[in-house]
Image (cartoon, rainbow, N blue to C red; front, side, top):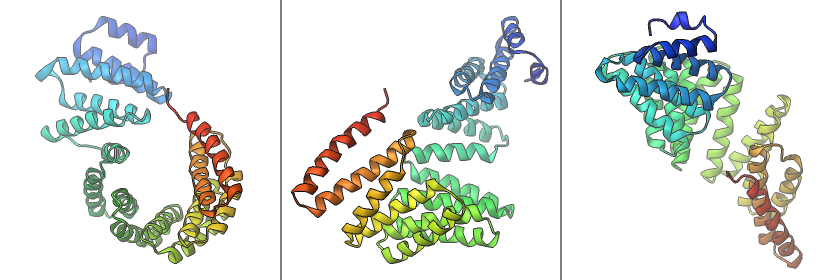
Length: 311
């Protein structure tokens, strides 16, 4: 896009005036620049529309379109769609962008592969995500980038977790942890250890998982990370349940439910998850009073679930 540097110096109004005065690829360039500006303002809906329009103008040019510019518009659509959780749209556009760059021997950014991998994960295409992360892992390894290696090993582990192949997930996570400890990356180390606790739980290694959770809770309390503390407390309750310690699990779940505030959709989802476990405990404990409370909580749970419905 030959006039891109020039466009950055113009106001939005001037870019639109330029748009009306030019044709074809120059019009696409104007829309691309306006999309970029909307993205920088976190107006992803507008940015997406403009990026799609820019892409379509270039597509209409057929073989006359510049391959790099066309790939960039596909990526712009994917990036904005990702921010709007339109994962199928991300996959459609980023896959096309990567195909264009491969066919024309153009360079890609690792971020583009990350966006695609995330979309695969969100649509439960875990095998495809693993393939991408393995490719990125190889490239980071060739560059001796240990942070990149540890991060992608952890992502590979998470995708094996999505496939419920927890033995493989644990192996990959332990490899990631070894690197994270060596480079003394505290945040990454704690994140990987949290996933390891989850994999141990899923593998039925409850004593090891319980010990890991207690260690992690101490670390997150020092960091005042309430979100992770709540996640770990819930996992602890799940472990107690699987160890047939229903009374303790129930008591801890009741305490935990008081800590979660319905401030946003994520916290409401946490409350829903906790309430389902409380109801399960009440049903397991039995007795008329517990069954009655379970029924009352079920009604409240249904009201909570209505709050998460997308209109």
